[in-house]
Image 1: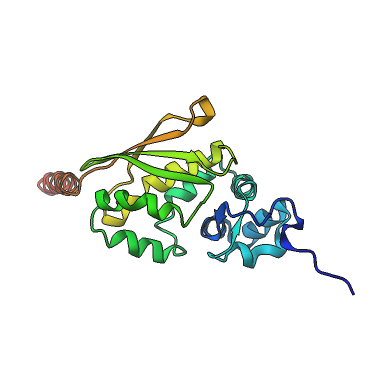
Image 2: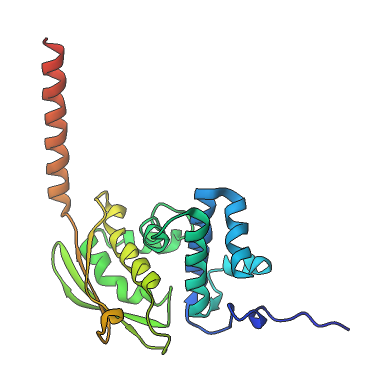
Length: 225
């Protein structure tokens, strides 16, 4: 009798508890939005994971760090994007595959409180790297991202982390946060540090009101000619 090879017979899908299926599901969801079903099939095909789609869409499935990177790189190749991980991270709130996470974060009521909770939420996406809150203000935060599994660091993962950090304010009607990455393990540091700055809600409302006021003046001026 012929035995079916386990999923991890493919070296790009080992049963290491590094990456949650939440991330692979998000990648496939984004690719499907941008390129349809053919795009998803192309990404999976490039990684040799065509038969593993159900696993990769299962948020309870955990797999290795190398597969995470391979999926992001394949997405970039298929979509013709040089920064797919950033785009996917930033689009996380727009996509419908992280509903539970979004509800939990939105319940905090403000970007500040949501950012304060991220170190705990991070464990739902990765066990290979730890996210620690270093500083939290009314409109800024600093995070440390460190390897705890010996898998190292990768530019794609830096982009994904930055994109995810940027999207938090959009859950509360704000603009994406500005992200700085002044310290990076890929540049010789022992860890990565991300600095996050977002627009406080009052400022966003004031800016919107000014914009509406300017538009009204412009319309009024045009109609009086």
